[in-house]
Amino acid sequence: MIFITQLIYIKEGSEAVFNSFEQLALPLIKKYRGRLLFRLRPERAAYIEINTEPPYEIHLVSFETEGDFRQFLNDEERKQFLYLKEQSIRSSVLLQGKQL
Image (cartoon, rainbow, N blue to C red; front, top):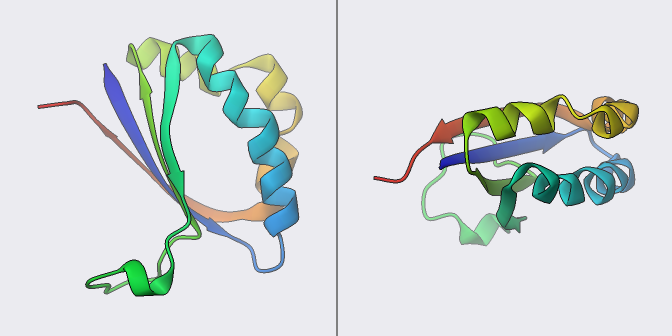
C-alpha cells in the first residue's frame, strides 16, 4: 500500500473552480483501489509552527499499489476535466510514502 499526501495551493479567487474539479476527480479514486483518508483546509490558528506559505487544502490518499495510483492519474475521464485543475491550482506538492 502507498500513501499520497498532497499540499494544494490554489490561485486567488478560484475556489469555486477548484471545488468543481474536486467533485469530479475525488470519486474516481475508488475506481483504482484508492481511498481518500482525509481532506482538510486548516485554519491559520491550527498551525503550531509554520515557516512557509500554508496550503489551501491537504489530502491524504492511499492506493493498494503504485500502479493503481498511476492508473488514476491516467484515467481518461479525469483527463477530460483537468482544465479545471489547471485553471484553479497554482501549485501542489505531492509526497509519496508507505506505512512503517
